[in-house]
Image 1 (cartoon, helix red, strand yellow):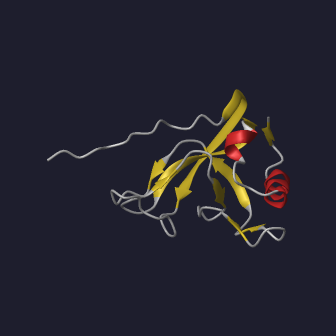
Image 2 (spheres, helix red, strand yellow; image 1 turned 90 degrees about the vertical axis):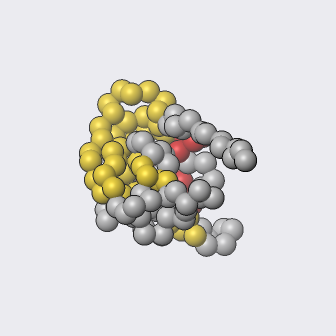
Length: 122
């Protein structure tokens, strides 16, 4: 019997590596949904708050908000299948807006840009 496995590449979120500043931090496993193979991945470009939790957008159209205030953006994908893990959290640099802000409503984008003034989106 054969099993089909689809592999994905790390999403490139950088517009340029100029002024790239990252700090190590803990990425929490709580709230991360496992994929079909039972793996829990927090992908590059995910917003992370001060506790290490993933920040998401909630609310109906026109009244969208973020679950918490982000302090940075995850630089590389982290596997949290077996619990909390260390991750590299970007706090300064240049990111591709089409990837790092994809899926966020205008209010969410404004909130992210306000919370992360040292990250420039291009």
